[in-house]
Length: 446
Image 1 (tube, rainbow, N blue to C red):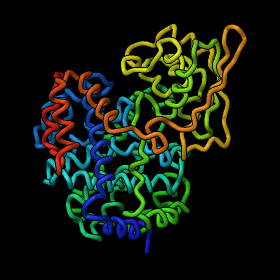
Image 2: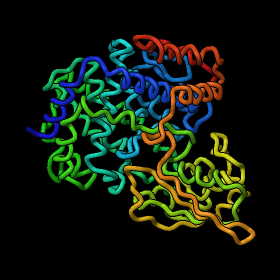
Image 3: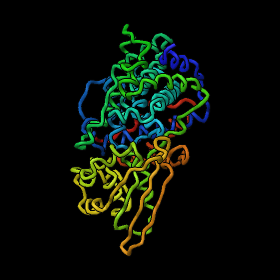
Image 4: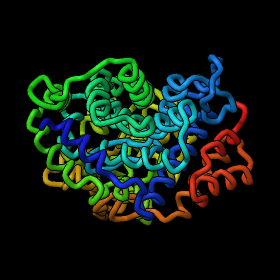
């Protein structure tokens, strides 16, 4: 039996009704993704995309009150949700699950049909699959130059949508293999601070729907899609042995749930940066200089090349800059969405020039996202602060009220009335079957 066959058998053995706690957590992640997408439609770098005219259809474009076809809705909504770097992440697998899975299952349900409970179940199942794809090759996609979310996202998304379409075993095997034809998404955006990383999530969501359409139209895929040097893991993670690890990881589908470990984001920037910001925020006064110990495996994203990270050309480029984001915390006392619009702040750049880094072997990454900073003060004293893991993850989970608070804040940034935001939160979180149609009320002028 191939890894794809083994994975699909595990998916088919999943419970028809989610455990209550998994259902609760899945609803929170869906709510969070929707709120981030609505804020992005008004305030983010992809807001022009959100406002662009398009063909009419049954599927909601977040924050606009307009409808379009499922493929375009998945592309636009996934791009919006990922565009602020404010969407959730499973740290061990380094996967931004909701930015691919939420737009895929929502578009599929609005176009093809499906209850709110079916949407949540498919969304949660997609998360479990995506996490296992990442855990099979820890940080392997990133080392090979691919964003794991856009490489593995089409496969997990296609399986989630296939569940909504009630695919049988043969169709699900085909759909995961066909979806692998759409795997893509690299990190070249980092060299010039381009915004196409956001579109990689949207393209993954769109690819998931396309794979399902193709299989429904008779296209088939190879069941050994994961195996060998030219299989999915061999190509995208340079790790063909990961197929065997995926088989093992598939054994506990339905008994071991990883979704509760997915971390919500409290800052609109690369998740690797969050524990560093938290460490600096604990200081009782502004430091003159900071030395950061960066977990090996993160440096290509947040620290290299250091001279460019210290002097980003645009503020939105700084979402992946360790020195600039830490300097924001020092100079402005916090990091907000508004900090990544317009031109870089000269005062922040001056502080960023006084920040240095060194590699940190044995940090525990990617199982945890830790940080260590050594701050030096004007009087010659110093202080070292270590954060063992990122806020919002399994070791430091958010409660329901904090997720709702972030959702309300994002809706407010988009001009959504508080009462409307609260009604949507109730419709998604408190009803026996989430009322997906309530999302259409999150309308504002984009």
